[in-house]
Image 1 (tube, rainbow, N blue to C red):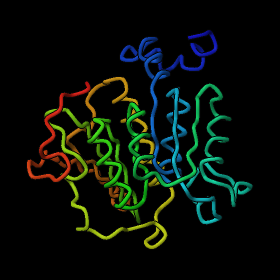
Image 2 (tube, helix red, strand yellow; image 1 turned 90 degrees about the horizontal axis):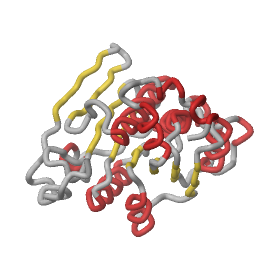
Image 3 (tube, rainbow, N blue to C red; image 1 turned 90 degrees about the vertical axis):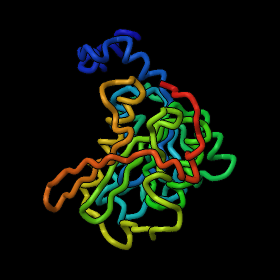
Length: 254
């Protein structure tokens, strides 16, 4: 690291659990962020500020006025622009050293497989089950750690899945495809600070996974009830009958 980097990240480097070696590892990490909306905004902002060196952001939407209540990557003069272009500009302004790669499309099929295979970790900040199941399948296939978040109305949740780790479930162990209908913010509403809390937790877990720092949330689901300000942590065991990971006996990346 150069002198400017040592100064920029000095408060993190001071942490004995991180130090210079940890910061250098973070600078070399490539994260794929699926979704540049309510969750993707705070997650991307904090990862860029923290110095996660490569951020790939995928989203096929354009900025709308109704997004600005919670999607803090975007501003009023961005209305009509691709969200990933707006995201790149905001993140570059925060930290010009971070390499931001925008993908202005909904990742699926081979494109999704390639993006996941090239990433060190994935943050699922999407708002629909179809994307979540597809991202989970790709992460299991390529043994790429997945940090999953969701928020709607006044409740949010975060979970971490590390395919290949012996005790790690996957998103398919928690939810079965086709069992639950989508609950989107556009239909049900969402409180603005809630997505900030959940997206920030995703960024925190992403840094911890990248650095093997402390105890990550693998095997646990954290649920936040903003109305009552209550936190619950639920254990999520690996399901031997899971159609996605039930027969996956890979070796942990950690």
